[in-house]
Image (tube, rainbow, N blue to C red):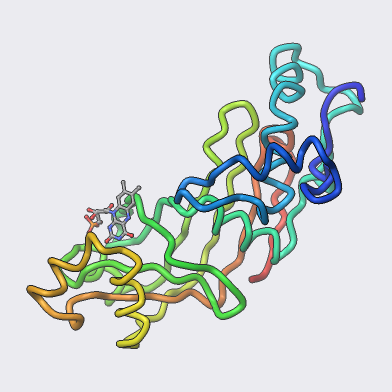
Length: 210
Ligand SMILES: Cc1cc2nc3c(=O)[nH]c(=O)nc-3n(C[C@H](O)[C@H](O)[C@H](O)COP(=O)(O)O)c2cc1C
């Protein structure tokens, strides 16, 4: 194909060569990626093509179109679960703040993350729960960025807190000392996502309701 590989490259399961690659790779959290979404493979597969596109300055019809890189709700959720490190922006009066965060999970019930009640982040969310999350695949040759804006709600769910601490055992010594009460968990259920890619850099934003 001249130019660039569309994002709808063959699924892992449908392509033997790709399947071998998938079964060997690991995601950032060390999990097996055999069930990873198309977009992740796509990023790797399209990388050399994208590099060509950007180094040659091609702007013709072979560029990916917005339609080709569009994600639906399911794909957005898959993307952020596979790329769980994100940056979270809050507002404090007229001052913006942004910091690195680690997604706990994202599914039909919302996007869940945690922090500590001792943090400025907690204080800011108590006053203004409107946030924007910024996720990226971190693949230089084919960057994909997903931003999600919405309002977060605190979740005082002890079972969920216990589950989080069990999976994130670095939190355990701190929780043992201060108690689960100090762990703050949030969910965003009304998010609106927008996807950016190198190939659609200058195209108008499209929004996906989550
Ligand atoms: C990649 C990355 C992931 C992080 N994940 C979390 C997290 O899930 N929860 C958290 O409270 N802090 C996390 N941190 C640390 C926060 O960025 C840091 O505590 C920050 O100071 C919190 O914001 P604040 O200073 O406005 O309170 C993470 C940092 C990095 C670099």
